[in-house]
Image 1 (spheres, rainbow, N blue to C red):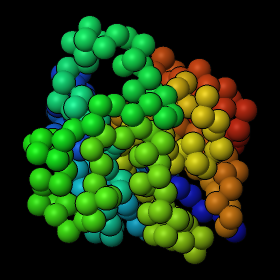
Image 2 (image 1 turned 180 degrees about the vertical axis):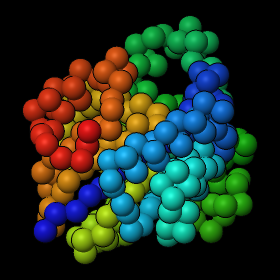
Image 3 (image 1 turned 60 degrees about the vertical axis):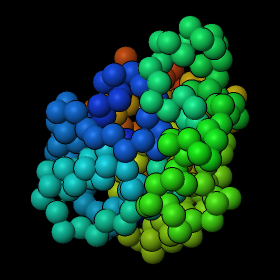
Length: 254
């Protein structure tokens, strides 16, 4: 038995447009981001893909993308399960900062490591900082040890995977078709986990906004084929192009 998993990064957000680190800041979609979300829904519909359940984060750029996608699919009633473990990685003291000034302050190589490497963690926020999620009532019930002050991709993965293994993966193993609408880092972490991407290769991997990545997987969660719906090659990392070229054959990925 095989089933389908669709992974989708939210559409362009206001801080994507402004070239700011967003992280757990609850910024909204731009008009372009709304259009990207609707287009993603239409692409999924044109490919004949249907879903039984959708998972997303608690941040509005993902939840609004999810709503717009389901509307375009003609499935607004689909069950949507939100969880903070699908939130974007927390960028610590970089959150809200424009990327250009931070490159001048820390150097381009350090920013590259914080953004794309596996284990480089940005400077942490202090608990009294407004950017610390523990000051947000949505996370007030969490164990303080679970609330990030700043995360590497490795930290983000460690926070995400328990939710994947306990909640999302069992639905796939039951044969349900799953749509995950999340963020660049959480999608990168999931793909790294599914495809066994090496730590040293993950910096090559990019997730464009609003472009669905479709997996056909077996009951053991082994990917049999995967690829994007109508990718924009200029926005896709070299490593990913090689993987898609090798692994995607005939199927619903388009």
